[in-house]
Image (tube, rainbow, N blue to C red; front, side):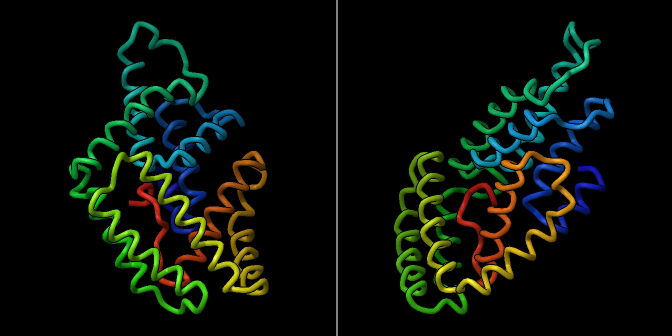
Length: 226
């Protein structure tokens, strides 16, 4: 990962996901041109599909390595879309490894058990959010026994997280929520001129969600963040 991406990562993890992919692709392509709007939208789709950064970078590297040894290696790659098939292949390998517990020693069952533990130990969560957190802790512990297919599990996690976030927003109140959103907007101001509005909106939503959960000692409820 380029030094600039590491610096951005310390500022905002959600924005850094996009920036790291741009840095990696541009540096490996060997061309000073930056990403197009279509490229940013492709990264947004990868992010919304729950593809970890390391998996996306692995797919891009595979695509560019293959190009470097192909008959068309003298032709410049014009778009990040060239790497889409290899990124999807890298995602499928990651999902199989996670299902089998071969991804850095992690597996879906232990991830769910970890989420359950985090929910059970959540701090400063008053009613009615507290009752929801307690219920979700039990649900996650039960689901850990039989996680099911990875993509179905990620959908299940997404629905639980959305329910939890809505409850935490209500508990926080409009003033605290407005303050949190203002802090996120300040951190993301440097990206406004570089990214399409829909991409920036996605980054903002992810950043607000992360900070709202972190305020109660909770992680994002997604395999993406493992």
